[in-house]
Amino acid sequence: MTTLGELLAARRGVAFVRHAVLTFAGTWAAPGTGYPSWVVGGAIDALEAPIFEVPVQAPWSFGFIGSPDPKAPSYEKSVQIAVEWAINWILAHPFQTFAMVGYSQGAEAMCRVLLEIITPGGRLYHLRHNFIGGATFGNPMREEGHSGPGLLYSDGRGIAAKRLKNTPDTVVDIVNPGDMYGSVPAGPKLLDKQAGDNITACYMAAIQLGLDINSATAILAALTGKGGLAEQVSELLANPLNVVALGKSVTIALQFVAQNPPTAPHITYEWRPVHADGRTGIQYAVDHLGAIAAASAAA
Image (cartoon, rainbow, N blue to C red; front, side, top):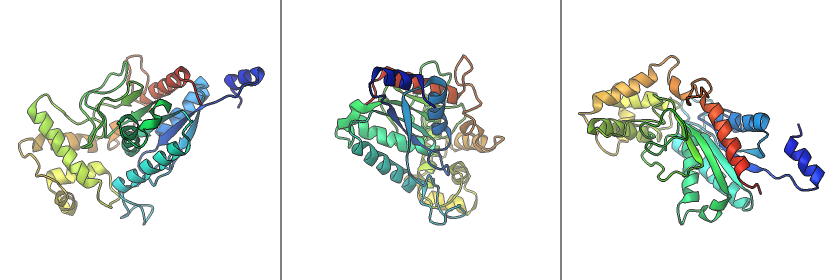
């Protein structure tokens, strides 16, 4: 369908240019599907945003045992594949302006690419002027306290050990309360920080395994010490868990896994309001993407 912008450009005899939007899907989602792609589609359909989607090609997997693909790599390897693909695409299009949208595993991959953009000496630092912004859902690398203008929730930090610092103003992190991947305790109380550190330690071990399991299940197993899975995760821990904070860590993980459906805060961004005006996470991200696309000249 031809947009108004395209019609005006044709009438004026000028080229209609768009921003690329690299979409980083969640675990087991096919490239070009899921929340990030919904956001791009919504911004095009509802706002006629001058953008086009570039689905990042990666397995988006969590291991091979019991998975749909017997050759599927671990979460960590899957993220690395996504990062390299995205970096190569951006390098191959040095004059193309672009945004990024990521969900869950895809948000972690997106943030690793973002670090290459905003960090002096990064592989994409010389192209930082092309980056117009982005959005994440349930971001494991979310900077402590970071969210977006008007968002209701910004507590805690992402579950990953390495997280963003000085997140660009044009990037919003959308996180539901109770989404353990996007928000674990960070303080100010020492017990809260220690509980968050325990969860992070188990997460960093779990993502190295070649098991097709929900990482929350692996984290809970390691925290409680139950079953063979607990032994596998525990063997990969860099440091022993903090025993004093263990009870709080287990409570957080158990509440996340025991929701109906399990991990509900992480998989309901199309339903739960994230803004005082009632917008859901998807709606908020659509509006944000439309705004940054309109505010920047496409190339």
